[in-house]
Image 1 (cartoon, rainbow, N blue to C red):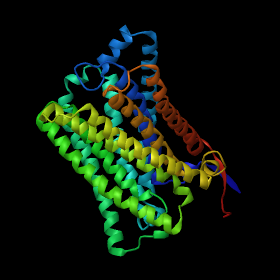
Image 2 (cartoon, one colour; image 1 turned 60 degrees about the vertical axis):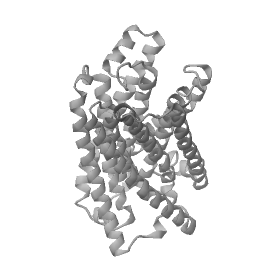
Image 3 (cartoon, rainbow, N blue to C red; image 1 turned 60 degrees about the horizontal axis):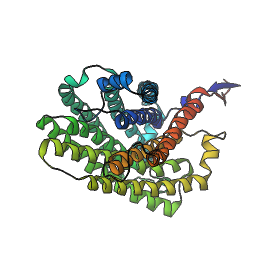
Image 4 (tube, one colour; image 1 turned 90 degrees about the vertical axis):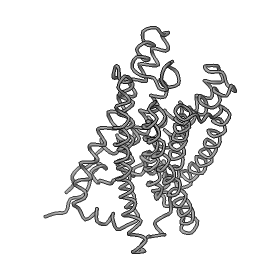
Length: 401
């Protein structure tokens, strides 16, 4: 006797990455507006800037704006929908033996995908407000303290989860080295960095010194926490892979360094901007260019390493185009998103601002093609994986009574 079930019916906390990837993809569309729409008077484009460009801009600019807005709405909807679905599923999952087994294994850090995704959704909500809510910037200084509280609460949740895991493995000593052949233990660093970049937004955008200062200091705390946790997990992961080989199903985690670097890179730029606006600490375009180039270079190296590991393990044929399904495949969305985002920043905030590249020139669009390719890959992965995991049913055996 058989019945039909979706892969997502076998729940794992890693399904939070489905929501996270959708949220990240929404951000890639916002960057079109951020870099290509004039927004005098504030550091980011808001509803009034977009409405003005839609009214007075050329046809191609209007088409770009409408496409960006459609992309933001579509992927933000999936981000929020899948976050709610995950929270409900996790609540039920906590009552099962599988949850107890998860909490007693290396995989306990998967639970940190929850604060990671919550932090992303708060960022997405802020983007929705900027793009679609008229007059938001007139009350934004009242919203920034609320954002700081929301991100801080999310960060505390992440720290509590991380402390619970570290306390268990440090006292019980039952960490399984043979099952650690990946960078899966960098999930906590990813979560802490996402909280940090959210806190850095009020630090950069607020013109109230106290609000900006609180955002900058809290963002710096989570940045340092992410760096420490990430470096330790990186060394441990490399040690396990060299000793026991890479875990084939967890190979996508090798690429997790890419989104962590993008998030920390944007965090650093936001902090520097806040220090410039509110505290008279002025950087140069050359310094920003070199900072972005160094970050981008490391991302390229890890992208090459990760792609080679995916090729050697046949991951694409097994879990993307073949019969197998792995929730860990959602970990491929974030590197695609992050690489495209960092490419946009490297081009616009680095090359253009330093005078090495003329904006909207032929060379500009050729280089931007890399960002478009990464964005297109992220879009395909989100849609393809959602179809495989949430829309596809497969036959499973049901024991006879």
